[in-house]
Amino acid sequence: MNFPGLPGGGGAGAGAGAGAGAGAGTTAPGFDPNDPNVKWLQKAMESCFAKTVMSGGAGFALGGVFGIFMASMAYDTPFHTAAPGQPATPISSLPMRQQLKIGFKDMGARSISTAKNFGKVGAMFSGIECGIEGLRAKNDLANGVMAGCLTGGILARGGGPQAAAIGCAGFAAFSAAIDAWMRMPKEDE
Image 1 (cartoon, one colour):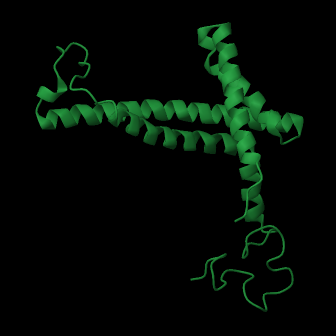
Image 2: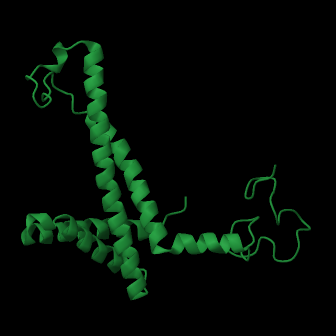
Image 3: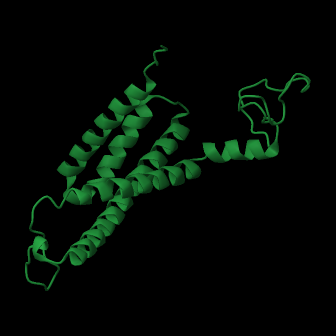
């Protein structure tokens, strides 16, 4: 079985007598840029809806992993908050099986909560940024800064105008820093 882009050629357009135009263009070797499936996939990847869904999904997955990690670090003391309606009992005095049950249940709840939050932030930011980029018809640092400001303001709106302003400034600054770093020319070694 041949796979495009692997050593030894493979796929359509590989080899010496592959025909005129094979391998030319910006697509990967073996893919015809005029193929309707390739065009459909490229259009889908450039749509704001697809970018928003992919960012939300990636944020959800990353948030889940981050939530599991952070929840596993929360058990650094022998005491744990008791379940509602239960007396406060040190978790270390419970049997091992009960400790694991409580720990895994809490880790699951925390990871789902963190995953939802990361997914919401990722989808909101990328959707807003894509919308701004479409309206401005430019791809520059200002799109990310404006999207960061709007995202931070929307997320902090429940805390009042001062919280929304601080959220706007914080997200805009973070977005500007990350975007500036990502746009820096890479050094070839």
